[in-house]
Length: 500
Image (cartoon, rainbow, N blue to C red):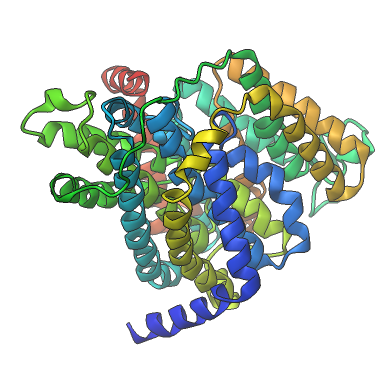
């Protein structure tokens, strides 16, 4: 306990520097903004802003990117409540009761409940990260190459099962990501692989190019084809702070949502997205009158909003302690860390304690900033919601092109980004989810490295993966979840859940 307090004091010393405070505020403000504006999302925004972080120190860069991610969870609820459009994937559930509350003239109470629940959940989840950080890092230090490879296999299996749509399509996306990660020069033999004699591919596909194309450009194309229908609530926002009866109704859902979202957020394969859905289902089952849900029940806002913010924060646990990104946003964070020469994993806590604890401390500060940004500025967010998307997309594309060109000063990178943008758009149209592909791409090189190391140590014997107890256990979990997911009855129920 004393060690944790001394580490937290180190973290607050880093996070409270003037530069890091400014970057934290900038990240939270941008995150709220892109959460409020439907159709952009944190994945595309972080991909666009990756080149900007090159000139920053690693701690400041990651503090800003983290602020964008959990800030988007706050902003997404504003759009869900006022416009009935989820500004972020995790805000889908908030539209069900939040918009109904707004129609009843209780928009302010819904926004206040969402913000306060999110603040509480964010603070508790950050404490959870601080408490689990050291034990998990010590456990990770016991892992060898075989255990790391098996852990990544398990993570990718979770990504397949938790991805929206067909399991087969998600599996294909994972494999495509792994295949793309092998493009370039083999580090051990020096031979070029799958470059087709094209010199710009000799160093492999740039992470920023792939991410910005598949999520930035493709997202713009997807939003342009759908007509804008924004039903902004015309009634007054009203008071923002809930009264005592609202608080009494919200306390238990907030506590349950925080626990549920925080637990699911740790799961590899985007478990954080499941948090709000699970919380809403639980609250509906526990309610004395379930018919209230969908008609403006405050529990349907408090629980899911707490769950999505708790999940967004605890998603950093596997990233910071094990080096395994549980979702596409965390995969982008891995890319940002790699760009700055930091290898994600247990060494981060021992070799870069100021980065690990500085990020944790910045999350507390960021949650407080978000409370201030969201409630007093709600009038500004309402005005922004009236800006047509067709006026925003040219500036988004220009920023993307400038950012990607500034990475290597090569025009071919812009062309590759545009190509991946068209490819990403095609994937979306065909019902493939691009996020698993990005996870596969990020983990591909690391998986190849750990596989080779394990085989060198075992003198080429694949039995090393089943002879080592931890590795065998992780592989058994991976195979089990895949087999269960493929059972016809479970697969049908899974499809029903995602459709709902």
